Image (cartoon, rainbow, N blue to C red; front, side):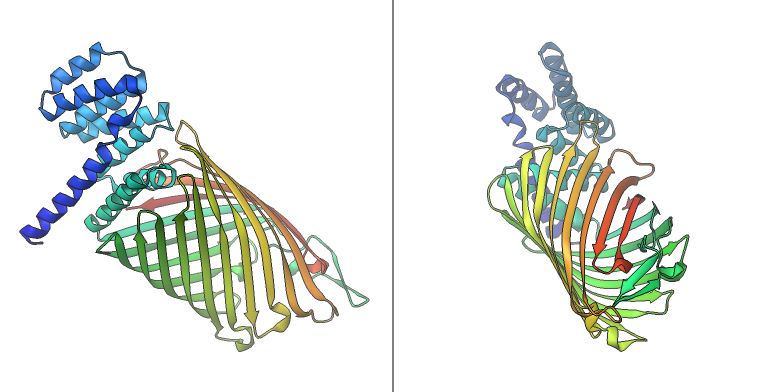
Length: 434
C-alpha cells in the first residue's frame, strides 16, 4: 500500500473514532461535567490526574468501569480496558455508550469478531442515524483490514421426528386404505451438520463491499441416511450500507450430492434489505430464488422462491420485535408437487444484562397444491405451525468458539394423512469465525 493509501486509512479511522467517541459526553447530566474534565485530562496525557479525579467523584460501578476503561484505552492498554468495559456492559446491558466504547476498543485490539458482534447490535438498536452510519463505516473498515474471513460451524439436532414422517399407521385415499410404509413413518434420531466457508473481501467506495464466497457442508442422520447430503457452493456477494438503508445480494451456484441419488445443481440468488422508516421502525425484506436441475429425474426440475416481507420495531435498546408475511412458490414438472404457500411470522428478541440473547419466534401458514395427488383424487392442502426459542451469548466462547441453541416444535396437518406429522427438537451449534 502507498503512503497516501496508508494516510487515507488513518484519516478514515480517525473520523470514525470521532463520530463514535463524540457521543460519550451525551450521557446523563450528572456525568457530563465529570466526563468532560476526564476527557481534557486524558487528551493532555495526564492519566494519573484523571484517575485521581475519578476516585474523588461520585459515580456508580458501571460508570467507574467505563471511565477507567477509557483511561486504559487512551494509554493503549487495550487488553486491560476490554475486561473492564465488558464487566460494565454486564452490569448495564442497555447502555449504548458502554457498548460503543467496548466495540471500538476491541477493534483497536484487533479483536474483530466480538467487535463486529457489538457493531451489528448497535446498528440494530441505536436510534441515531448518524451513529448507525458510523458503525457501518467501522464495519467496512474492519473488512478492509481483513481481506479474508473464515467461518466454521458444527451442530447436532436430537429430534422426536428427525425424518418428518407421519404419525399415522394408515393412509386413506380415493376410498381405499393403505398401510404407511416404515420409510414414511415418524422416527426419532439425531441430525449432524458440519460446514464452513471462506470469503475474499474487496471494499468499494461508499460503504460498499464485494466478496467471493466459497463454502461446503455435510448433513448426516442417525437414522435413514438416505436423507444425508453434501453441498458445495460458490457465490459473489455485494452489500452496501447507507444512512437509512442496507442491501445485500448473493448470486450463487450450488451442487448437492444426495444419498438417495437425487443429485442436483442450483443457480440462485439471496436478497436482503432493511430500510429505516422512523427511529424505531424499519422495513425488512428477505428473498431466496432458485432454479434447480436434477441430474437423474428432469421432471422434478423447476423454480423455487421464498420471500419474507415485514417490519422490525425497536422497543428499547435491549428488545425488538419482528413481524411480517411469507410467500412461497414451488413450480416443478410434477404438477401435484407444485404449490403456493402463505404465512405469518413474528418474533421478539431480548438481550439480558448477562449478555444472553433470547429470541422467541412463531410462524403459521398454509400450502395449496396445484394438481390432484396420485391415487387420492384430491388436491393436497397443508396447514403448519412452528414455535422456536433460541439462546446465544457471544461472551460464552472457548478459543473463539461460540455456542448457540435453538429448540423448535413443528406441527403439520394435511387433508392427506400421509403428511401429518409432529416434530420437536433442539439444535445445539458451535461457530468459529475469524
